[in-house]
Image 1 (cartoon, rainbow, N blue to C red):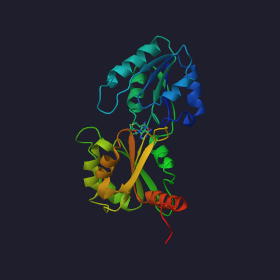
Image 2 (image 1 turned 120 degrees about the vertical axis):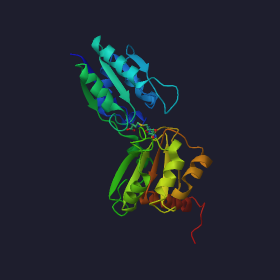
Image 3 (image 1 turned 30 degrees about the vertical axis):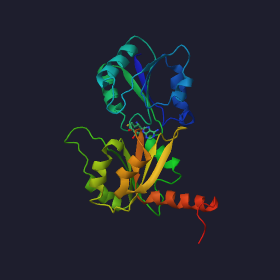
Length: 256
Ligand code: SAH
C-alpha cells in the first residue's frame, strides 16, 4: 500500500514528541523535514533513513510547496515508508491540508499524527495558563500572514473579540507586527499586555513582555525574530506579576 504519514514534530524540544510520532520516525525509510523541526527530533530516525530537508523559512530561499508534494508522492510510490515531519502540529498553519489533498488525489493514503503546536508551547513557556478563568474564556489562534488580499485579517474585529476576554495567539506575526499592532489598537487599549516568545521549548528560547502600544518597539529593542509567537491578552498579566514576585524574592525590587 502506498502511504505517507504526516507527523507533528512539536515546537522543538524532542521530549514533547508523542509516542506515535517517535514510532513513525523510527519506521520511516524517508523523512522529509521542515526547517522548523528541531534537529534533536531527528535522533529518533534510524541511521539508514534518508533525511531530506525541505525547509521554506518565511520568505527566504525555499523549496516550493509543489516540489515537496511531488517528492513526497514519488518516494511513496517507489515503496518507501515516507514520513513528512512538520513543526508543531501538521494541521495548524502547516499546509498539511494541502499535502493531504495532493496525496489522496494520487491514490496515496495518508495518516496524521498530532504534535504540540507552538502557540500552546509558547504560552506554557511563559508559565501562564492560556485560559485562566479570571482572565480569558477562550483563545483565537490566528496567522499574522494571511494568504492573498482577500484573506487579509481584520485585526480591528479580532481586537473586539479579544476585548471580550479571548486571548490572541498569533503565528507568523513578527514581520507584520506594525500592521497588526495598528489594527489591534482599534479595538484594544494600548496598555493591553503582550508577550513575544521566540524558539519556544528550545534551549535558545527567549521572550519579552510589554504593552500592545509598544509591540514593535519591544520586538526591535529585544531583537526578537522568527520563529516567534505573539500573545495578546490579560492572561499575560500573570507573567508580569510573576516576574515581579521573582524580582522581589531575588531582592531586585524591595517590598514597599
Ligand atoms: N504547524 C506549526 C506552525 C507553522 S507556521 C505549529 O503548529 O506550531 C510557522 C510559525 O509557527 C512561525 O512563524 C512561528 O510563529 C511559529 N513557531 C513554530 N515553531 C515555533 C517555536 N518553537 N517558537 C515560537 N514560534 C514557533
